[in-house]
Length: 68
Picture 1 (cartoon, one colour):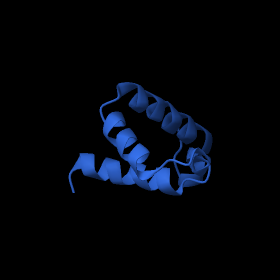
Picture 2 (cartoon, rainbow, N blue to C red):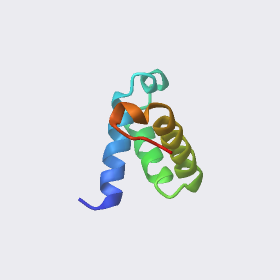
Picture 3 (cartoon, rainbow, N blue to C red):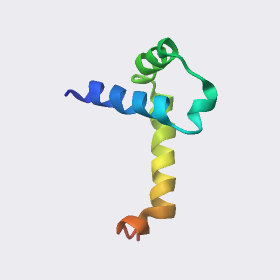
Picture 4 (cartoon, rainbow, N blue to C red):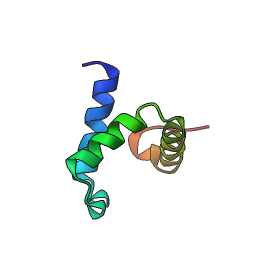
């Protein structure tokens, strides 16, 4: 699977199964629009990067990550 397809599969899974996201009631067409729009959206990646960084800083120890 190429990286773009893997990304779309992961995000699609999250959009379809995310507990908080279910409140949005996205239909399949909306999900497809989002998937193809977001994969080249640098703001999305910037926000995702921030989220991952903060999560690792806050909870990394739970996974054996020790930041110095």
